[in-house]
Image 1 (cartoon, rainbow, N blue to C red):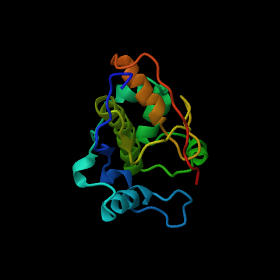
Image 2: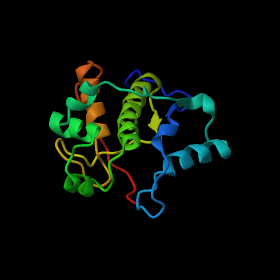
Image 3: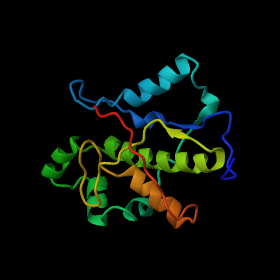
Image 4: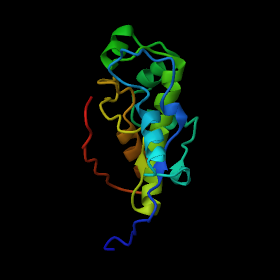
Length: 171
C-alpha cells in the first residue's frame, strides 16, 4: 500500500448504547433511536459482530471540546445555562442525558480516528455531528465531532492536516 497503511480485514466499529436514550419525543424529527437501531440491524443481519464493536470513553476530558468550542458555549451547554433561543436553533431541549450523549458521541469519533490510524478504516455508528460552529450549534448539532477529532489528532501529533469529506444523508 502506498502509504504503508494496510486495511484490516475486520472493520472496527465504535458504538455505545448511550448514543440513543429515552425518553425521547416520538414525534421529534431527529430519531434518537436510529443509533441503537443501526447497531441492532448490523448484528441481526450478520453485517457486523460484537467483536468489531469498540466503546468510547464515557467521560471525555473537557479540553477535547474547549480546544474547538468557545468555553462559555461549551460549559453553558454542559450545565444547562444556554439561552433557550440557542437550544431552539440546535433543535433539542436540554437534558443531562443529551449532554452525556453528545460528549460521548464526540469521544466515539476520536476513537474511530484512532482505530482508523491503526486499521486503515473505522466507523463511528453515532458520529457526523459537524454543523456546530465554535460558539453555537445548529441543525441538531451541539458539538462538532469532526472538528474536535481533527484538532485532537493534530494536538497529539498523529496528523498535521485533516481532510473531511461530507457525504452524509440529511434527515
